[in-house]
Image (cartoon, rainbow, N blue to C red; front, side, top):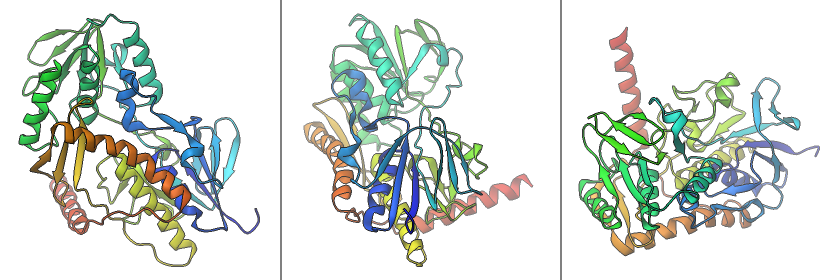
Length: 398
């Protein structure tokens, strides 16, 4: 491979696959994706896997460009000084550039009993275990879903739609991102499915036992199966490798997605914090950032200065079972507005997000460089406002 620029992509999710495919615009680039699993996980469908309606995987050859090499292994450390990645099973991989796209997972719940008795579902392995537990339990067994973000809402709706007796414990507002009008519509849809929604003050979980969940207001809910969707974390690979991260371990980059420690490393997806201000986590965001990370490297290889990333969010979609959904429109500052699409049309729009999430990858594999997205002309203002807040906090603590 003499004369080739070697790129190692650590992580084979939406960001990593998009970056790998986009780099294939150049014939003199070799790309290796390192991923611990043999199949591509459609992570936004893990609630379908839990409910038994979809396997949430496709083969990597369906989504990766034919010239991209896949190594099924786990990166244990990045040696940036030597430009190499140490793998758990197959030795080391040298690189000229590295794309850091390790994604995210559930965080260790800070609630007594949750780690022992609650079931996470942020990875396919965890979702498969939960599916097995549900399959062995009687239909009337009480299921408690903790966390009312998109994953919690969608999981509660899917399980209720398949006959499970479900309570959704919000620990605050139902769908905190949603506009109040959309939130009320979501609550009505969940009620029609038979989901008991516990929201508002006092609904934070304070303890999980084998067969119950205790709330801050001292209510105790019978719970044969407790599903934990609250909170998230990221792998600690960057921290272990001596690269600077934010407080939860996301790699710190500039706005071009280049590591602030090493211009040979770029990052994309859930595991990056550009300017310390991460983008909203989603498959759409991951794909756009993966594409931009590749563009940063391609420009650098061509001797051209990379450009800042910019992703416009115009909506967020939440599934409420096969018959309903909420397509929440948003402003350029990624704040929900009073307009949304609900009901069956909302469900159809949600179904399209599943299709497009994978199609964007396959299209990029067929025609590298084809993926397009809208920029956000407010990103610079948001970054400056964040920097001002950080500076103010530092001055107050000095």
